[in-house]
View 1 (cartoon, rainbow, N blue to C red):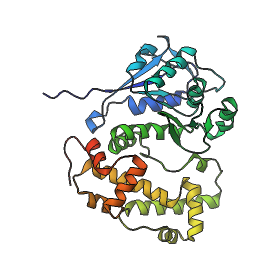
View 2 (cartoon, rainbow, N blue to C red):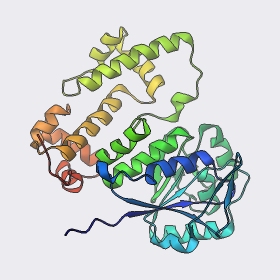
View 3 (cartoon, rainbow, N blue to C red):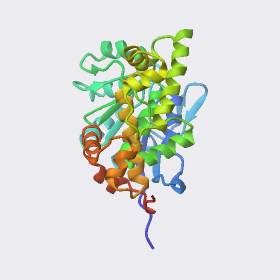
View 4 (cartoon, helix red, strand yellow):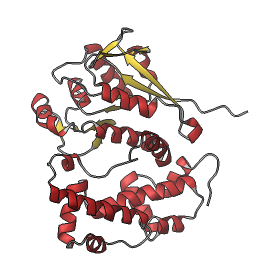
Length: 328
């Protein structure tokens, strides 16, 4: 009888001042059992300095089930954001984070959790980000951090940081995707009724829309829906612009304002995602996967996998193919 694979050990780092929303996101992504749908088993532990309940805003409290002594067992440590960014994390927590980083453990901070990593000195000289409204504060408080202004999430030295609120969901799903494959991340996303990944930057959320911009957004949404249904075709920016009833230049400008990225970059992201799913779910030959996902050739697909995922399509399939066998 084959033994089930051991659960992946995840630590939710808890201390007074963390945001209940981020705790909920982490718990939803890693705390639910979805093994019946092909998602790996996770062992999510609520780790705190002591056994006392950790108070959260809104009259809530989080009950730890492990102390900091458990952290060396964790394969991934999640640091929630803060309700008040003037609140320092307890020194035992900061010291535990430093030791975990030295061990090489992946550490991910959601939203204002970047302030906690910065307090620990882990972000000195590294790229990091936070909610767009807190960017200047992070720069002022921690001038040695290379604060990025508008990404959704970023990694530097095995330390992940994300932009505000919903971008924490994006980061969590990306971490699942990186460790366990696109299909596992898509399954988690479907259960949460959210997109498996978003493209672009948080700059798209800063400007206030106008009625005219809303009309443009509707048109662009229709174009994106069309593109997703025809990824295997040789889509061009000019053709998509014509479908939107815009000039190429105007289309590119409005597309970037709505999504935070260029049309070509957006297409590439979704073609890679489509190829990942085919590699996980099917035994189709590489040329056919390249054709169906819109790369045209296996060579082109291989080049994009190398530059974006630091792996090859064949290596990706070997790592993430469905355990119950592929299908056509």
